[in-house]
Image (cartoon, rainbow, N blue to C red; front, side, top):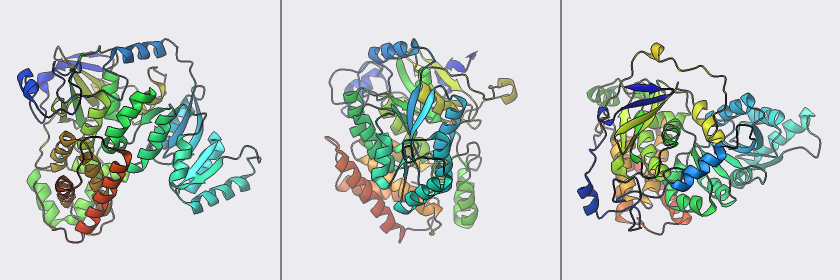
Length: 487
């Protein structure tokens, strides 16, 4: 094992994925190609089977040239940013970065839910041009609070808007060049699309944008020449590891997972708890052992659907086929993910479990800004361990791989069904923990039988499938079986 800065290099055989790598003959005989071109994509073991053009600026000669050109500009840059979800975890941590680097970042727009108090504080401090809240009532309250403060003249009061149109206005404010998508769920899809159409770079913290909208988003990214820059820890790690890797050099992506709330509970014990201690399961599933995250993502971590969704996101971001994306459980959450190159070297990105680290790289790429954070101390950590995930204990992983391999509208159904089941579980309407994958599987089966579309997917197709899957889960929840289920 060799350490260089925050890079770990080790034989790739140390990590066990969900499936072994197929050989070249297997790829050559494959008839299930997720990329329509007959021309092989470099980095796909020579055949291009299952590999697609990446939305992130990696894996091509052009992306290397772009990265070098930007790096040579120096770190005295200034970016104007719009933050979607400014009062949430991603948004507040992004603003921490703005505070630490005031010469590099200017906030032009903020959007949030209904947290008027915090939005008012942010408006007073950062003076955005646009401030959006989810409801008309919240927007009216914000305007009243800001007017009462006496801190704004008539000419410099933010344009206060609301609803879906308000989010889009925040995402498309003319002066911003980068949009941080920190809102949870499919709500981030439309504003991201509109920002891309205007040529704005995307600091992507919203998984669902690519999971649901990948078939639409990736062509738009290519058409408008924008940079899709991952702002979550795992994909940022992969993105950082790929810096300087030449075209054709990537062989495999290895996503690390904390294992979530039930990491240290055996499969048998988890099933028993789901049957006999439902309230304890409810509480534990919504508490993450390592990260301070939002409620939805914390539960996704407990089911490990978050990692399944990240597999799909990695496919669209980096172009790797699903056969070349693996998951490994890493309890310490220090190695944030890895890549394997064609020579079987394994390169990893390490750091403390601090979401500000991937966010700062997404808004400063390819620069490295000096940040006032605690340096990594490997001696303090002592040891790093890795485990193969149990797909019986975590059936959502297999469901995500299945949806990803089917492609088309199936990933939108997977994502929407998961969002709906996740929300109902957190609302404590009587849904069991293991009913979550059961409902998702049912939605996928129903979509497979009717409505599935693989080619020429449009935004309307995605939104329609999203709505259908949510309604499916809502209706099926009324009659779902309240027993532990192994899928």
